[in-house]
Amino acid sequence: MNVSSTLPSSIRAIVTGHSRGLGAALAELLLERQIDVLGVGRSAHPTLAARTAARLAEAAVDLADPASVERWLAGGALSAFAQSADCVLLFNNAGTVDPIAPLGVQDAGAIARAITLNVAAPLMLANALASDDSSGNAASRRILHVSSGAARNAYAGWSVYCATKAALDHHARAVALDAPRGVRICSVAPGVVDTGMQATIRSTSTDNFPLRERFEQLKENGQLATPEHAARLLIDYALSDAFGSTPIADVRELV
Image (cartoon, rainbow, N blue to C red; front, top):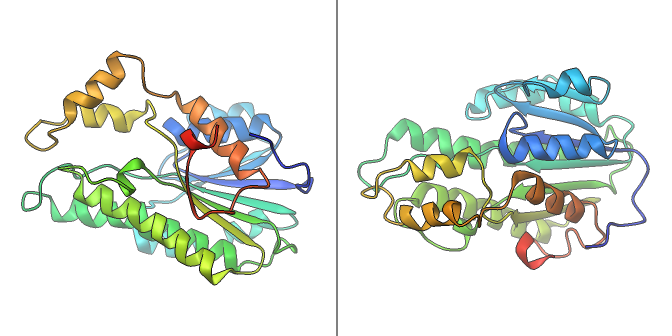
Protein backbone atom coordinates (compact mmCIF):
# COMPACT_ATOMS: atom_id res chain seq x y z
CA MET A 1 0.00 0.00 0.00
CA ASN A 2 1.46 3.37 -1.01
CA VAL A 3 1.29 6.11 1.61
CA SER A 4 0.31 9.48 0.21
CA SER A 5 3.17 11.81 -0.64
CA THR A 6 0.85 14.81 -0.51
CA LEU A 7 0.04 14.73 3.21
CA PRO A 8 0.77 17.88 5.21
CA SER A 9 3.72 17.87 7.57
CA SER A 10 1.76 18.44 10.80
CA ILE A 11 -0.36 15.37 11.58
CA ARG A 12 -2.08 14.50 14.85
CA ALA A 13 -4.13 11.43 15.72
CA ILE A 14 -6.90 10.64 18.20
CA VAL A 15 -7.12 6.98 19.22
CA THR A 16 -9.91 5.60 21.39
CA GLY A 17 -9.21 2.57 23.56
CA HIS A 18 -5.46 3.19 23.34
CA SER A 19 -4.43 1.39 26.54
CA ARG A 20 -4.43 -2.15 25.16
CA GLY A 21 -4.88 -4.38 22.14
CA LEU A 22 -5.27 -2.83 18.72
CA GLY A 23 -5.63 0.66 20.18
CA ALA A 24 -2.30 0.39 21.98
CA ALA A 25 -0.63 -0.81 18.80
CA LEU A 26 -2.14 2.10 16.86
CA ALA A 27 -0.90 4.61 19.43
CA GLU A 28 2.61 3.15 19.55
CA LEU A 29 3.05 2.99 15.78
CA LEU A 30 1.72 6.51 15.28
CA LEU A 31 4.14 7.83 17.89
CA GLU A 32 6.98 5.96 16.19
CA ARG A 33 6.09 7.91 13.04
CA GLN A 34 6.43 11.16 15.01
CA ILE A 35 2.68 11.75 14.97
CA ASP A 36 1.25 13.29 18.16
CA VAL A 37 -1.43 11.10 19.75
CA LEU A 38 -4.39 11.85 21.99
CA GLY A 39 -5.46 8.59 23.64
CA VAL A 40 -9.05 8.53 24.90
CA GLY A 41 -10.44 5.85 27.19
CA ARG A 42 -11.17 4.77 30.73
CA SER A 43 -7.54 4.05 31.57
CA ALA A 44 -4.12 5.32 30.61
CA HIS A 45 -1.61 3.24 28.70
CA PRO A 46 0.56 1.51 31.34
CA THR A 47 3.96 2.50 29.89
CA LEU A 48 3.60 4.70 26.84
CA ALA A 49 3.47 8.07 28.59
CA ALA A 50 6.82 7.51 30.29
CA ARG A 51 8.45 6.82 26.93
CA THR A 52 6.74 9.42 24.75
CA ALA A 53 5.49 12.12 27.11
CA ALA A 54 6.22 14.93 24.66
CA ARG A 55 3.97 13.49 21.95
CA LEU A 56 1.29 11.62 23.91
CA ALA A 57 -1.73 13.18 25.60
CA GLU A 58 -4.28 11.03 27.43
CA ALA A 59 -7.89 11.74 28.40
CA ALA A 60 -9.76 9.64 30.95
CA VAL A 61 -13.24 9.29 29.47
CA ASP A 62 -15.78 6.51 29.96
CA LEU A 63 -16.79 6.05 26.35
CA ALA A 64 -19.64 3.76 27.43
CA ASP A 65 -21.27 6.71 29.22
CA PRO A 66 -22.76 9.26 26.80
CA ALA A 67 -22.88 11.97 29.45
CA SER A 68 -19.17 11.50 30.11
CA VAL A 69 -18.38 11.78 26.41
CA GLU A 70 -20.58 14.86 26.07
CA ARG A 71 -18.90 16.58 29.03
CA TRP A 72 -15.44 15.85 27.68
CA LEU A 73 -16.27 17.20 24.23
CA ALA A 74 -17.82 20.32 25.75
CA GLY A 75 -14.57 20.92 27.64
CA GLY A 76 -12.73 21.59 24.39
CA ALA A 77 -9.91 19.06 24.78
CA LEU A 78 -10.42 17.68 21.29
CA SER A 79 -10.32 21.17 19.75
CA ALA A 80 -7.24 22.08 21.74
CA PHE A 81 -5.41 18.97 20.55
CA ALA A 82 -6.37 19.56 16.92
CA GLN A 83 -5.37 23.23 17.02
CA SER A 84 -2.77 24.21 14.40
CA ALA A 85 -2.51 20.68 12.99
CA ASP A 86 -2.68 20.41 9.22
CA CYS A 87 -4.19 16.93 9.35
CA VAL A 88 -6.15 15.25 12.14
CA LEU A 89 -6.86 11.52 12.16
CA LEU A 90 -9.55 9.90 14.30
CA PHE A 91 -9.31 6.16 14.94
CA ASN A 92 -12.60 5.06 16.51
CA ASN A 93 -11.16 1.84 17.89
CA ALA A 94 -12.71 1.30 21.34
CA GLY A 95 -15.42 -1.33 21.40
CA THR A 96 -16.87 -4.38 23.10
CA VAL A 97 -18.14 -7.73 21.89
CA ASP A 98 -20.36 -8.15 24.96
CA PRO A 99 -23.08 -9.17 25.50
CA ILE A 100 -22.49 -12.50 23.79
CA ALA A 101 -25.80 -14.34 24.10
CA PRO A 102 -28.99 -15.08 22.18
CA LEU A 103 -31.82 -12.58 22.23
CA GLY A 104 -33.88 -12.94 25.38
CA VAL A 105 -31.00 -13.68 27.76
CA GLN A 106 -28.86 -10.61 27.13
CA ASP A 107 -28.26 -8.21 30.01
CA ALA A 108 -30.08 -4.92 29.39
CA GLY A 109 -27.30 -2.84 30.90
CA ALA A 110 -24.70 -4.59 28.75
CA ILE A 111 -26.77 -3.83 25.64
CA ALA A 112 -26.91 -0.14 26.54
CA ARG A 113 -23.17 0.04 27.25
CA ALA A 114 -22.30 -1.71 24.00
CA ILE A 115 -24.46 0.61 21.92
CA THR A 116 -22.92 3.66 23.56
CA LEU A 117 -19.32 2.43 23.32
CA ASN A 118 -19.58 0.89 19.85
CA VAL A 119 -21.87 3.44 18.19
CA ALA A 120 -22.76 6.60 20.12
CA ALA A 121 -19.21 7.50 21.17
CA PRO A 122 -17.68 7.08 17.68
CA LEU A 123 -20.49 9.13 16.12
CA MET A 124 -20.14 11.86 18.76
CA LEU A 125 -16.38 12.08 18.26
CA ALA A 126 -16.71 12.06 14.48
CA ASN A 127 -19.26 14.85 14.63
CA ALA A 128 -17.06 16.90 16.95
CA LEU A 129 -14.03 16.53 14.70
CA ALA A 130 -16.01 17.38 11.57
CA SER A 131 -17.44 20.51 13.17
CA ASP A 132 -14.13 21.70 14.64
CA ASP A 133 -12.33 24.45 12.74
CA SER A 134 -9.50 24.91 15.22
CA SER A 135 -7.02 23.15 12.96
CA GLY A 136 -7.39 25.96 10.46
CA ASN A 137 -7.44 23.42 7.64
CA ALA A 138 -10.76 21.68 7.17
CA ALA A 139 -9.38 19.82 4.15
CA SER A 140 -7.52 17.29 6.26
CA ARG A 141 -9.71 15.44 8.73
CA ARG A 142 -9.84 11.68 8.37
CA ILE A 143 -12.22 9.48 10.36
CA LEU A 144 -11.55 5.74 10.51
CA HIS A 145 -14.14 3.58 12.22
CA VAL A 146 -12.68 0.22 13.25
CA SER A 147 -15.39 -2.10 11.93
CA SER A 148 -15.57 -5.89 11.78
CA GLY A 149 -16.50 -8.76 9.55
CA ALA A 150 -19.46 -9.02 11.93
CA ALA A 151 -20.80 -5.82 10.39
CA ARG A 152 -21.20 -7.63 7.10
CA ASN A 153 -22.00 -11.18 8.24
CA ALA A 154 -24.44 -12.30 10.92
CA TYR A 155 -23.27 -14.57 13.76
CA ALA A 156 -25.43 -16.38 16.31
CA GLY A 157 -24.95 -14.88 19.76
CA TRP A 158 -23.52 -11.64 18.38
CA SER A 159 -26.71 -9.76 17.53
CA VAL A 160 -25.66 -6.67 19.49
CA TYR A 161 -22.07 -6.68 18.22
CA CYS A 162 -23.15 -7.29 14.62
CA ALA A 163 -25.75 -4.52 14.80
CA THR A 164 -23.37 -1.96 16.31
CA LYS A 165 -20.57 -2.61 13.84
CA ALA A 166 -23.06 -2.52 10.95
CA ALA A 167 -24.16 0.87 12.29
CA LEU A 168 -20.61 2.20 11.87
CA ASP A 169 -20.51 0.96 8.29
CA HIS A 170 -23.80 2.62 7.43
CA HIS A 171 -22.79 5.80 9.22
CA ALA A 172 -19.72 6.02 6.97
CA ARG A 173 -21.85 5.43 3.88
CA ALA A 174 -24.26 8.21 4.83
CA VAL A 175 -21.49 10.66 5.81
CA ALA A 176 -19.82 10.03 2.47
CA LEU A 177 -23.07 11.14 0.80
CA ASP A 178 -23.14 14.25 3.02
CA ALA A 179 -19.63 15.00 1.72
CA PRO A 180 -18.74 17.40 4.55
CA ARG A 181 -16.07 19.85 3.49
CA GLY A 182 -12.60 18.49 4.07
CA VAL A 183 -13.68 15.26 5.75
CA ARG A 184 -12.78 11.76 4.60
CA ILE A 185 -14.34 8.73 6.28
CA CYS A 186 -14.11 4.97 6.03
CA SER A 187 -15.30 2.08 8.20
CA VAL A 188 -12.53 -0.51 8.01
CA ALA A 189 -12.58 -4.15 9.11
CA PRO A 190 -9.12 -4.98 10.52
CA GLY A 191 -9.30 -8.75 10.14
CA VAL A 192 -9.30 -11.21 13.05
CA VAL A 193 -6.82 -9.72 15.51
CA ASP A 194 -5.29 -11.43 18.54
CA THR A 195 -6.60 -9.14 21.30
CA GLY A 196 -8.43 -9.45 24.60
CA MET A 197 -11.68 -9.54 22.65
CA GLN A 198 -10.62 -12.85 21.13
CA ALA A 199 -9.90 -14.21 24.61
CA THR A 200 -13.40 -13.19 25.67
CA ILE A 201 -14.85 -14.99 22.66
CA ARG A 202 -12.92 -18.19 23.43
CA SER A 203 -14.09 -18.16 27.06
CA THR A 204 -17.77 -17.90 26.10
CA SER A 205 -19.98 -20.96 26.34
CA THR A 206 -21.07 -22.58 23.10
CA ASP A 207 -24.67 -22.12 24.25
CA ASN A 208 -24.15 -18.38 23.90
CA PHE A 209 -21.75 -18.50 20.94
CA PRO A 210 -22.04 -21.67 18.81
CA LEU A 211 -19.03 -20.75 16.65
CA ARG A 212 -16.57 -20.67 19.55
CA GLU A 213 -14.62 -23.67 18.22
CA ARG A 214 -13.90 -21.84 14.98
CA PHE A 215 -12.21 -19.02 16.88
CA GLU A 216 -10.33 -21.49 19.09
CA GLN A 217 -8.93 -23.07 15.93
CA LEU A 218 -7.86 -19.71 14.54
CA LYS A 219 -5.81 -19.17 17.71
CA GLU A 220 -4.38 -22.69 17.76
CA ASN A 221 -3.41 -22.53 14.08
CA GLY A 222 -1.72 -19.14 14.34
CA GLN A 223 -4.26 -17.51 12.03
CA LEU A 224 -4.89 -14.41 14.13
CA ALA A 225 -3.23 -11.20 13.03
CA THR A 226 -1.07 -9.44 15.60
CA PRO A 227 -2.30 -6.05 16.79
CA GLU A 228 0.87 -4.49 15.38
CA HIS A 229 0.27 -5.93 11.91
CA ALA A 230 -3.35 -4.81 11.83
CA ALA A 231 -2.45 -1.37 13.19
CA ARG A 232 0.21 -0.85 10.56
CA LEU A 233 -2.26 -1.64 7.78
CA LEU A 234 -4.88 0.71 9.25
CA ILE A 235 -2.41 3.58 9.62
CA ASP A 236 -0.99 3.10 6.15
CA TYR A 237 -4.50 3.18 4.71
CA ALA A 238 -5.55 6.21 6.78
CA LEU A 239 -2.53 8.10 5.45
CA SER A 240 -2.95 6.99 1.84
CA ASP A 241 -4.44 8.93 -1.05
CA ALA A 242 -7.03 6.15 -1.39
CA PHE A 243 -8.52 6.70 2.06
CA GLY A 244 -12.13 7.82 1.82
CA SER A 245 -12.54 6.79 -1.80
CA THR A 246 -14.95 4.13 -0.54
CA PRO A 247 -16.92 4.31 2.72
CA ILE A 248 -16.22 0.71 3.81
CA ALA A 249 -13.13 -1.44 3.43
CA ASP A 250 -11.36 -4.53 4.74
CA VAL A 251 -7.60 -4.48 5.35
CA ARG A 252 -7.31 -7.98 3.92
CA GLU A 253 -8.42 -6.59 0.57
CA LEU A 254 -6.05 -3.62 0.71
CA VAL A 255 -2.71 -5.46 0.86
